[in-house]
Image 1: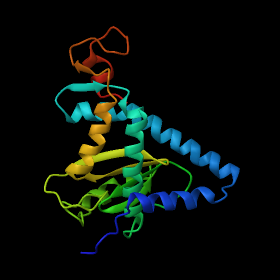
Image 2: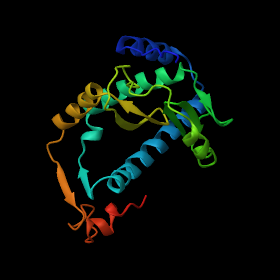
Image 3: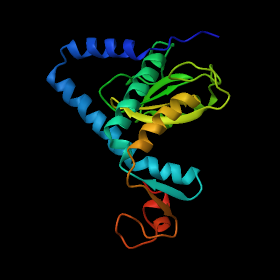
Image 4: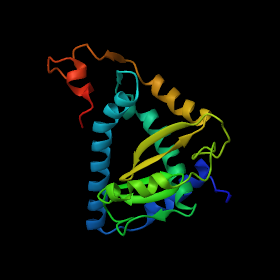
Length: 207
């Protein structure tokens, strides 16, 4: 099994600094910005529904996901995961990979595909075997209990697994920035103000 290189925070800052110094054509910069907005908007809209469908019928409503410390921790972890996957034999499943359009990247197995081609590639991805079981996609630590994570970074839906330490660091940052947490039961009024029950409104799994 090939060993992956896991980027330190200092290495990430160096890479980001080099990228920031590069000149990007205005048109390309606009396309990249549009792709990032699309991914972030869809991510914010669909993730709560996905969690509710996979969970136990409750949702957590908070602004912590956009709070500065949480964003900083998540962005660093996402950058480390992105660079590790990028340098681990990343497989491009469609001809549009790396174009200025929304993309989906998986850390293990390391693959990337644009969102438009994803439906046609889903079966192929599901047949692939993970290459680094019980290895954190962020720091490389071995941990028998891994936490799945999905985040939006640079116009990419990034999916991977975090060890307990990396997961706890992100969770701790979120908890410090959640002064107004609402635990919403499925039969309670929806916080969007529609007047309907949560399970019949935003908690119904609709995107």
